[in-house]
Image (cartoon, rainbow, N blue to C red; front, side, top):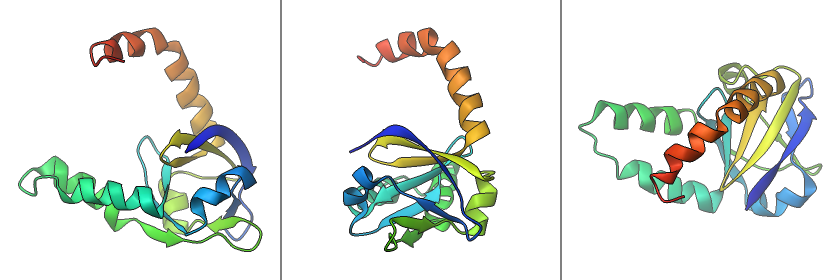
Length: 143
């Protein structure tokens, strides 16, 4: 399980360090893909297989299903931790997520989200201000 918020910098080769306590989840490798809200998603292999199966089951006849599948699958790539616990983020994914030098890794249970630090702060501030409304809406779902 991925939880927590971690601040790092991207090196000039496009690599980021994965916190040592989260590396076990990625010991078999992972899949990095375009995420939502201008972030990237990093899944363990096992969680990626579950996500890909759900995407595969979406109805091909619906435009939103096709668009989501393309977003998640076409931009995905396998990643492995190097000897120093880093992964390489390719240029096209750094560009998609507007990643500059300072980034945030946010643990969100079955995935790590990778954010540009400024984007993350803006998103977090907005979400925190709306937390009451969000909680009320989730109450309708039994949360």
